Length: 252
Image 1: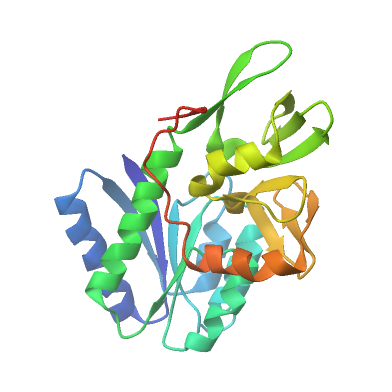
Image 2: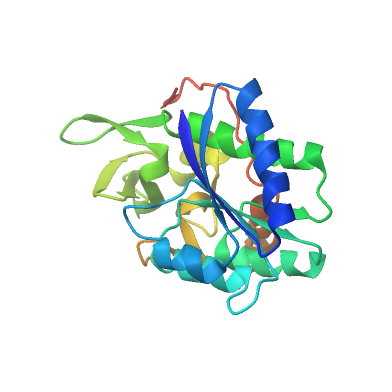
């Protein structure tokens, strides 16, 4: 498996530290990194295009001209909501602001090798799982396998008839079931219920408000007040996914 990685920091020593940790991890695991280094956030943004995307980005928060948070916001607006952004800074107060750009994690300076390695493992494990994990559903027309990473949201289409609508990156399909049943099935895989009748993929959230979440396809889903803090907590914990296979439909 090859993962494309960008390291953006105006301090070349910090870049090299992360680079060395990635190389060390690469040598001891079944994975390859394609790493690009940037000492200027504007250079990274200028090169960024649909043909040159990254799986992981390590971004320093404090950079001249365009800081890390501003860079991440512009990347999300491209839009690219798939790249895993890990902020790097010696200012922990920026951690709260990272929620707005759906950051995967936050590494404080000076670097702790064990902490960095743990985060790299979380990201690589995510890609290994989510590239192969599928949801099996039965529709009126056929039986389908849907990649979990493609699911944006699931909503109640008809509560009395127990019909759900699944919106993916490519289409919408309807199947039988309830949000409660889907929540039990998909909660370990980065899905959460923001409000009654809705289930969303945390990895497909583009923007978080106090009373709603904006998905990367533009859908706005209600967010109850009591769910706001738990949603932020799930993001902050980086959604450590379960490896278990359930008999109710999720296949690896």
